[in-house]
Amino acid sequence: MKEFICLMALSTTISCVSQTTSADILPEPVQIKTATLPAPEADKEDAMVYGYNASGELVVLREGSNNLVCIADDPKKEGISVACYSKALEPFMKRGRELTAEGKNTKEKREIQGAEVAAGKWQMPLVPSMLYVYYGSDDAYDKETGNLADGQFRYVIYTPFATTESTGLPGKPHEKGMPWLMDPGTYRAHIMVGPFN
Image 1 (spheres, rainbow, N blue to C red):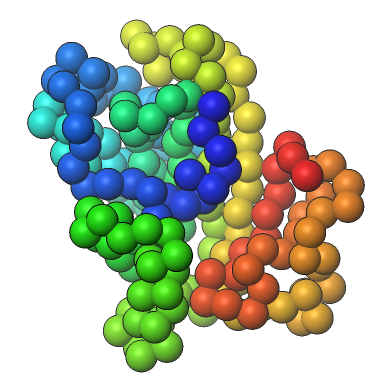
Image 2: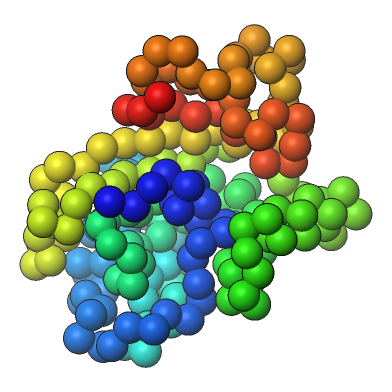
């Protein structure tokens, strides 16, 4: 199963070019159905969706008309993991994908993105912005319908530069499923809520 860091993470782990064959790429309607699983029901139909073409490249499968961007499951990775996020996070996510395509590791990407935000090259959202994650096992995934039988949600609320002091949230969870603040004080500070400690 994919770890949270992989998807959380969209900004640092999704490559624009994949090493898969066309046989590994699911039909666009199935990719779109699966990609939008994390989205609130009312937002699924109008969300923008990124997925994979026959060459394994990450491309726009559907233009959207609401505030959400969804990412299809990466066929190169074990397990199923999809996410939808506020369009306000697109500069962050897009830059992460670009740096991944350049071969930068996670530490390098975070340093580069942090420096770019500090220099005003692009901006993180000024208000809390949502990322919805849905993940599960390959065995529970139906490649014909795009449904995931054992899926679980994670919720990530980006609050750039928030601190434990400013939010009252702990820097790590002390109960299962409780919200906590990850990367406090940084451009990528975010509140984590999910079925994990």
